[in-house]
Image (cartoon, rainbow, N blue to C red):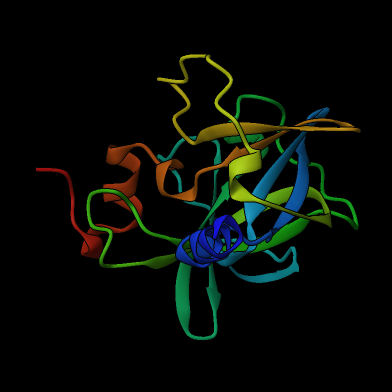
Length: 174
């Protein structure tokens, strides 16, 4: 009987299957993005600068007829801007801001050494007990044989004021 219960319990929790994560670096630290949040991984390309935005807003690009804002995640994290190397990628993610989660948009991220993947359970990432009020996009961490890997929460990448400037049609905070 216990065997049947554990089988039905496993089927009741579909998110307990291993998920694929894209690994990358910010400085010397490793980070992960859930592959379900990624629309496309491509090489870097020239961007149109956006004067008056924070330095970590790298600019905008036109991709398949759509204008997409791009964030340099290393600069967003407060370290030097991402180095433009062959392993540096432009990753287009589905950005669903918490203000308007029904209206996803594409957001570009410049990520260094975005060449490896990892398959694990989402629950393998654990809260590490540090207040990230100033960096809410920094999610839980995974203890890995090669060191800690921190998960990035795409929906929390942009502060409300920058979200409203880069995605005015998605709505601003009320």
